[in-house]
Length: 489
Image (tube, rainbow, N blue to C red; front, side, top):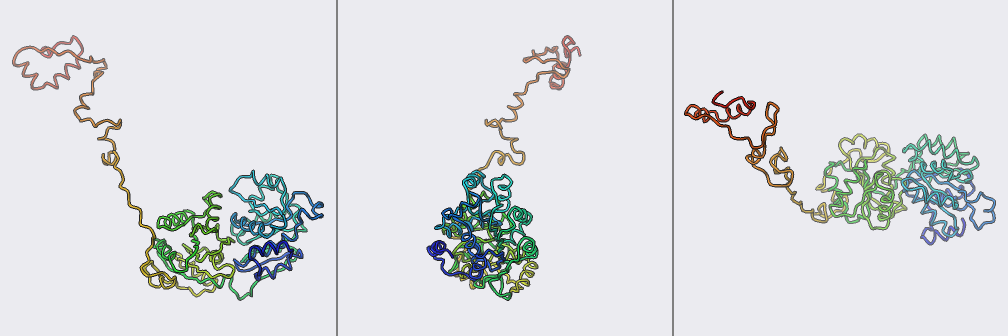
């Protein structure tokens, strides 16, 4: 290994290789195609990162003049933006003394910065499949001269439907390239991909076939829990003796947002991480979590792959994972690099059959999860929660009384009794008094102040006026002018 790489890693206190690194480096440095399979969290990134860096030509090397100027020498494909950023950070760390230019490209952000960096020249490109193809279509990225191509977390690319994109990227690279494929699991489709695009690859497995793909230092707890009681259980687990940073995995983006808001209202430093968030907000949340400024990260599976955050003591599956591979990668966020960790999985009654399938596939001893509530004694005993612990560390915000609106005062009718113009409510008499007849029933215009109608004297006429005043008055209005008086009628 180059002294510059060794010095840079030593400054970061990385001095002892993991099994996958020790077995891979000697093979990869010779340029041989290989398939690396190891448990998640055991250092696969540097297992391919060091050979890529060492076999790249630096600008100070005289051989650099013979290369296409500014074109990338190596390409690393990752399934998610977060994993691409993590791989890029590890490469920056290891190549600090070499002067190699590493660029990370991914979607969700503008093209301008990435286009400008590509125009100025790069040595190693790390990116997600979609943005890589977009840049190639724009002719801004030329990968026809790369000497090495790495597919990281290849099975996740298969699950996300990126396999056609990956094959398209492979077709743009030279046949003489070195291809390295790394993942924790190897489905049949990935094996077929390796046979098609790799030249006599060496398969390296960092543990025996009898070892489980899960980190053995992770303690696993499976609880049969009610959905409405899960936030309360999580809030009490966060107050356990050895609880550090916690990742809570949810099935949907809306669920991640809801759980994060619930935990924040209870007084915990929590933030969501899901696909509906802007890329800047996702990076900010992940950075705060890495820097211990955030304690709880509530994420969808977008963060389940390859995110290496130190100090994660607990991983909580808010719902039962979809399959055994998802379960393995989720709980692999804790117990990394030899540390211990705790994985808690909540199983709903409807998902009991799915869990039994996962349990059987991974040969776990949790065929019948124990029914658990936030007040269960075994929960306190398993997680080291002090007796009397409650599900919030701040008092609930007082409920503000809702101001009554005019619609509330008016009942179901809304504004019938309220003046919509903002004035005082008019009485029925005022409303009738303002209504003036402007046209008679015969179609003629009525006078604004009609003169009083004369009636004949006499007790009979006076009595008629008193007995049928309203009716006679209406009759008089309907008659045309000159028709006569009421007495003549």
